[in-house]
Image (spheres, rainbow, N blue to C red):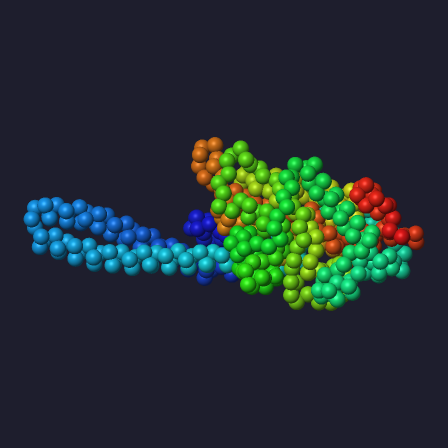
Length: 423
């Protein structure tokens, strides 16, 4: 969440940047400033009261020694009244602080200056394009028909045992899925990321720590009995490893990667664009997460983008990078770049990765800090990205690599699959 200091330093700029995300923050920011003034007034009264109580407590002992019992009794009555008054100050302080906290939880992160203005995905900016465009015949099959033809993904079985959006991978389809996971993990390892195997369920504190709560509770699967949430991405458990942690200067940067299943309700998603693997309730993903010093985070963001681009180039897929406009960004990010691959049979671009810098927004929620060379404690910057999400990668690979003989497996995956064609 935003820090109180950010808001107090430049409330007008905060309101202005929030508007880029389509968020009207005038009332909330004004209320926070009002509450902060009240909090400081109450704190001053509380501190003065505490000093007065300390003084009176010392005088009571002196009066008793001097045999002035009546005066001591009066002083005790004053102490009781002041303590009651101090209790009201403490209650007022707690109420003001809690309201500030709740308001901050519901204010999105500020988009950085490099974020373009815009309201929808149509306003995103194509920053870079690469990869060979496939030349397929007009009768090329979409991946859901290829999956059935070669018996590699069974969508009907998934509906039978769970419901729509939970496919069953079969035979060479399962092998190809596992190959992609191992390939992404191995490439992350080569790039210096330490592999983590996290839990697939998290507690409420973890959801708040990375900003899924209170923003996205409707999109998360909730285990009511235990008040736990199925993870929508490995970002959540991996970033929360550093909740309530003060890192040393020497420990940074931290580079972690993790494979996990991901679970998303995707409420309200219907129509042709969600067919097959295009939008699932359960899918596999390899995530990269970084914890950085503030001055290094944007260089780290470029490294992460280069890493994802390299994966797509090795897979031989056509890709482009979008710089998201303010209206299409997530609640928590300061800047986001989406990677999309071209699905030749569907003739459309499919998102396969989002790479984001959250600056101090998540770190402030997490209380993820580091002690610099001057022993001063500062908030870290957090970043993450998909490297990569599998379903749409699988869809594009199947469609773009189809031939009359079968589906050709990219060279970089063959040592993992043990076969070079799905026939």
